[in-house]
Amino acid sequence: MVLNTFKTGFFSHSSEVVQLCLRVMQKFGKSLIDGNQSKPTYDWFANIQSDGGITSALYVLKKHQELVDFVVNVMCVFSKGRLTYVFRDLLKSLYPAPLEYTSIINDFIYIIVKNEPAVQEILEHGLIDQWLEIVVKQADNDGKHSSEERTAAMALISDLWVLFPEKLKLREDLATQILTVMKRCSKDKNRPLRISTLAQMFRLLNIFSETKNPQAATLYKNISHSLVDNHHEATTREYIMANLLGIYQKHPSIPVSFVIEPLIKQLQMSENDTYVYGCIDFDFFSKIASHPKLVPTHALYILDTMAKMYLNDMVYANAAAQPFIRVAQRFMAHD
Amino acid sequence: MDTSKDPRKAESSLEMILLTLCASLGMKPKQSAALLTNSNQYLLHTVVKGLKGKFDPVMQWFKMLYNLTDDFATIIDLEC
Image (cartoon, rainbow over all chains, first blue to last red; front, side, top):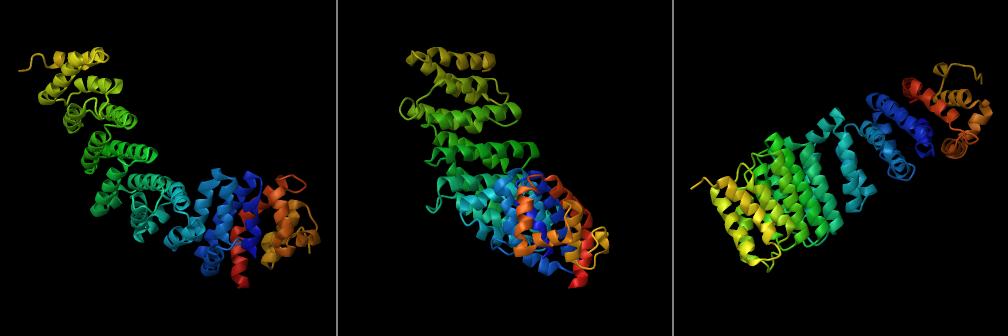
């Protein structure tokens, strides 16, 4: 009865009242759960009927999204010892659509990680592994999930990897599986999925390079393959090139050869056929020309290709001259 | 019921709720009790829309509840 009286605050039109109510519930719930009323308190909370505790707490998010931190903390208090069941099964039954469930977990996970006991509990109970396994399947192209669901899954995978890198160091099989799915999504026919996956890949590469994560090399190779695989799609190619230049600027120790060699080969093979080059390509090669990790062999590839373009393409002759001059100036003294 | 009684000295959780409602919403015990009828329907209306449109008394009530959570937990233990 007392909990039902208190929970009226969840439905208030006033954000301040709702926030106060959530604070009351968090403190009161802790007293009850840690005391002798653990079971009845949990039973009240875990009732997924419209008047149940969890349903009422989640109602707050419909009107006061800004209070999500408080809602998650209340959920963590009332679900103590049963977090895996609540966040996996109960939430799934309240949000049966994969897109909704994935998005809500994505919102919640950033709040859960700030709660040390909750993190400890979900790690011990293997919830992170279970979430990852679910979303990897959802992200993969099994024909059952829409591109929106796959995009949301990809975002959650990346967030979980960023937040729990140690977990994926222990689960190399899962890390490999994720990288494979990412690679596949980065060349998917659906452009929003493709671009958002690439965005996540660059985000991870940036973090992994800073934290010396061993998966950075595989991720970088996958991005390089994706550039070649998407060479015919100017928007995606431009997106990858622009992000690669950003990465090279931030992490000059990353070798460029993984990208240059296959890209130049592809360019030579399908020039003006499937590879319709543009300004971004010349800008890319100009900047690569000054990269400290560019080796003479690959510099020669660039020289050769740019020289051909200079001679054969009136439109881009001037643009092709830029990277050519830069490479030539830099390696002039070289044999 | 003596509305000036300290809620901490209430003998049941219901009395404690009524005392807090009387103190913060400025109501008589019968009026407070009426709020809890029909599965808290009238209390819900007050909390959702404010008391005559004002949320200050409602906030006052929740602030009072916040300070009494341990006392509520103790009295619930005794009732069970």
